[in-house]
Length: 259
Image (cartoon, rainbow, N blue to C red; front, side, top):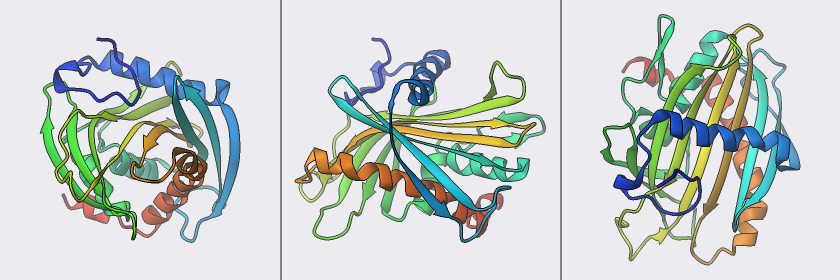
């Protein structure tokens, strides 16, 4: 079974087990965003606390496309960060840590646990299992606010620590999420939802330039029409960029340094 990024749920035995296959498929998707997807709105934010080397004004560009019958949305933003801030960002979003000149992933569940610290609507994270090849099965519960019911997601998450690209000054880290074929924890009170995503951090250590991309297809389920979800998702995911930098600027990631 070849690896595909779509909404079809994966059983554990069908997951790809080689890093190269996961990276190749995920990089191909994320690299197409700025070259072949349709450009959407751009969103502008001003950071209240600014850990970047820039002025504090952020532009987040969005792109969209249809892959088969699925609507995909991507956000892309560029920033300048010193090495220390970049490494803090990687530890939060990717879970990897810099040890000397090498990136290591001490705990491939760390990234999933960290999400609960900075995603306000994420109410519960349960690690279901990990596979020998590095996939992490996760059950997540999001509170979307009344009158919407709790949204429950089952996912497989795969983390790729930053690795050198063809440009010796640039490294790329990835986080890949696909739908897990797993039972809901509470099929009566909760609404089944899903999302598939690829997130990349491309960093040039010479110029200090970071290109942060995320591409996703999702469905919040329930009675919210898909066209309404699609119209709202660009603004929703764009806010994540300024929120994360303000979160870092306020030092909320300090808890990671004591672990």
